[in-house]
Each structure stands twice: as structure tokens, then as C-alpha cells.
Image 1 (tube, rainbow, N blue to C red):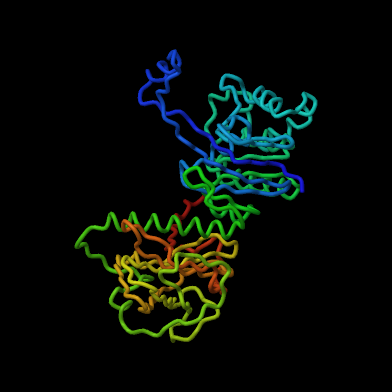
Image 2: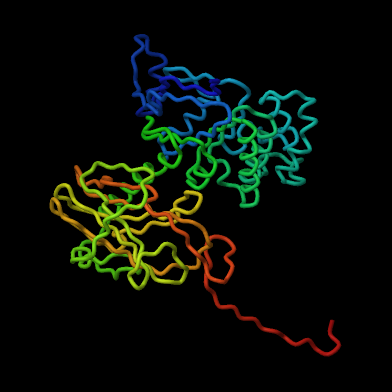
Length: 440
């Protein structure tokens, strides 16, 4: 099968100098002595992308995502390994990348489009559509240095998508756009994807990734941690971030502090008390963890304690999770991730919200109940993904068990229509001032 982009054992190193003079010493050293150390932004990265695929790159800041895109755009050369690109590519890696700030928008459109491989005639034919899509009005005749960051990315994106690329590279550029323009861009990205354009997309928005991605690649400290199905990779990435979040919370917990448990969290004393056990898992889309503890069941109960097949807004429910320890554990945390119908993480319930510090002995069963009243959400199918974490070496939290989409159920909103994701209650007052007789 044809391959649009191929990374084969690619590594990229940057020299790091202790002080600026070391760079000069290295240049003039007759013995070619090295005064730097190598920082490996990418290490032995291999993957391929086929025509029409959308590969989303996830990872923390500094994990090598932007370096990977710059290598794919052939802006950088790899230190080792090979990068093969087939067909015309368009890259939107930085705000106004490829623009001369002294030139006006009109001239930069022609210059940038020429760099992307378009002829003068092709640019003339598309110029009107580019300007209309960018929507910057008369600023098209002003120097780019007078543009806001949002205006620069508008124009850059408009040029890139009208160059008819076979490979589109996008690196968080849409994060600065206003909502209307961002929606227009995402709609255009979807059109390109459906037309067979290959897309490499870097974003911290998991909603965009799960919506547009056909596959996902997780970079961790310059290495490929995982590549595959979008939902699977995103789930593992979320679990990893949950571990870091738990570690941060525990390291910054004030000793002796007291805080009332919020509604929707578990009371530590109740967690250790004898409770009914949830012993069934209705569905398992994907499961992973180190196995030191396992989720053995999850239930959704209405206010009367009966199993609920759906949830109504403004009503009270109990989400029950039972876990079992395979060995003695400390720093135990139980979580439930709520995803919406697009698979996008919506919210998380966790025992950490109540500062509950839980420990288990080998074989012990722990039942945790999250009691909550649903706000006014829009009607849709949601899923619950339970997880149990516990301290491991050096006190760091590790995922023991994580189950994707263990329960799927419909959340039904009330009679009041919901415009958006959630209804926010408010009080509305109005004052009418009578007009004077004969007034206009």
C-alpha cells in the first residue's frame, strides 16, 4: 500500500552548551574537541502514514512533537535515520511561518504560496478564496508586523489549505484563533481528510484528536510510547497524566489540613466500611494496568438503590466501583472518567477530591461510592471508565487497572433545551423605564 510519510529509525539531537563561548571554542578547536552535550529531542522514531490518514500526535510539552513535524516538513534534517515524504506538503507550524513581517498580506500570500509550489496563475485563481477564508478585511494590504497573532495564523492557514496539499502538517496553530474561525478551520480539515489528504495533527485538545484522528501517536521524552487506535492511545495517555496529577497532588497536600468532602466524592470512612459489592463489568473496550489491583465491578444506582439504565439531569445517583487488591497497597486512588458521545473526556470523579488516603491489604475488597446530582447536561450517550491507581516505587502513582467504557448509558436532559454542553442556572431581572409622553 502507498505510503505518504515514512519515518525510519529517526533521531534528532541538538547541541547544548554550558556557555556561549563554548560554541566558539568548538568551532576553532584544531583538535575538534567537543564542548557540548547532545540533547536528543527524538530517539529512534519509526512510523508510516498512508494517504488519507489523520495521525494525531499527543504528548507533554517538550516530548518532541514540534521537532517531529519540522522533520516531516523537511525544515530540519535528522541526526540519524531517514524521513521520506511523497507529494506536496503544507506546514502550519508557527504563527505566520514563512511570512515576511515587512511585506503586506497580499505580497506574503504570493510569496508563501510560491514556496508551497503554486504557480503565479494558480495563486491568481485562488487569491480571492484565500482572502475570503482568512477574513482579515483591509488588513490584507497592511504589513504583517501589524497583525495580531490570530490574524497571522488566519492568513497562514488560508494559504496552506488552498495550496491543495497531499500532506498537511498542523502544530497547535488553531489554538489562537477565535471560536468561529477555529470551527471553520476544523470543518475545512475534515473536508481535506475526506478528500484523501494525509494530515499530521498536533494538539493538546483531546476533543479534536478523538474527533478527527484515525490513529494517534504518543511521544514521551522523544520516544514513541505507543501508536495505534485513537481511543486506546488517548486512554493510556490520560492514565499517564492521571498518575502525574496524583503524584503532584500528594506531594503538595498540606499535612493536617481539613476540607469538607464535596458532593460527588467518597468519604474515607465509608470506603472502608462494609458495603454492597459491584461484581459485574458490563463492557470492556480496552483494559490495561500493572495488575496490583483490579476493578471487579461497576454499577449506576438511582436514588432508591436500583440499577439505572439511564440518568436524568437534576436527579441523584450513586456510581459504585469495587476493586480488589492483589497485594498490599498504599496511596490507593479510585477514579471514574466520564466521556461524551464523541469519546471526549468530559469530567473525572476521584477519591483525591476528598483528600482520602486509602490503603489496602492483599486480597481486600474496596467499594467506593460517588454520590452526585447531575447538572443540566445536553442529552447524549455517555460512558464511564473506572480506574484504580496506587503508589509504586518512590511513592509515584501507577495505574493498576483501567477499563475503557465499562458502562454506556444515556443522560436525558429535562424539558428545558440545552444550548451547548451544560445549562448554567442564573437569575434574570429586567427593568422597564417608561418613555415620556411624545418621546421617540
